[in-house]
Image (cartoon, rainbow, N blue to C red; front, top):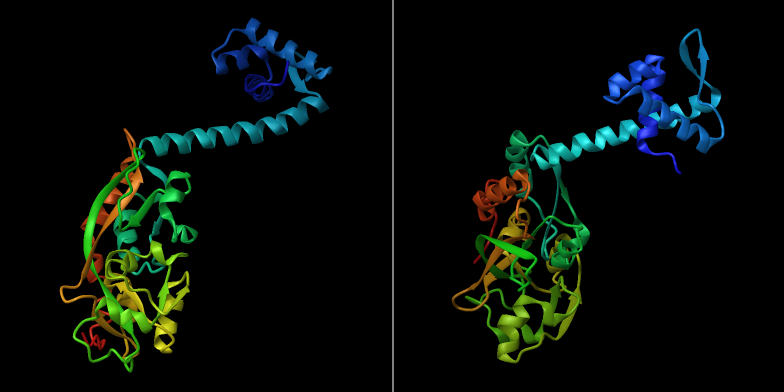
Length: 311
């Protein structure tokens, strides 16, 4: 027999009350049942846990050691039970989020302020390492909400449409294509295309714009940070295609120039991807609703109202 939780509870109760009778009352057990449990654990350890002194039960050194462990283990269990209950009731928890391709979260602070006023015990955490492949992290249990721009047919996933945004061509203001009204697929043929994905074939612009036109950029450079890609563009070392909402915080000078991709522009719809659940936590439903209500396209416009977009 091994020491069990019930034995730790017994030791703590007897140490606190000084008698089996009072301990049995506090644990809602009979005295005989508790006496039997005490004999079990003392037999297992090969040592008494209590001395009988003047009709009071006093801990032996072995009992003191076991009581020390009992406090740690039982306190941790009680804390875990309380936190689990709060999570089940939607009062506390954790939401791990990531956006597909983009490492910018200028829209998050406003949402966090609104959300935390309702759920102050729910932690919002960015999982930056999931940027390249958030669906994998979602299915692997390392992510709770992924902002994605494509829907994968998987029975474990559900998608909530959020907003539609335009992908634009981003270049240096002195780039050779600066005077074009819009960018054509063939315009990419001489460019160093800066992308997030490891493979060009995974890139949306290539998949939906360039590949159908049988065009491949002269050079492809993979970079994992939005900021790093835009610094390369500012140095006129390449071009990129990026969602306008992701660009908003960076269009505060004349160092970037954007143009539509195609005569009608290149639109994409974003979704909040989550694991399909019968009864998701109330706070997760609330977060998705607030995310859907948030106009990400307009976030940060006050900071860039003087930006030279030159579209």
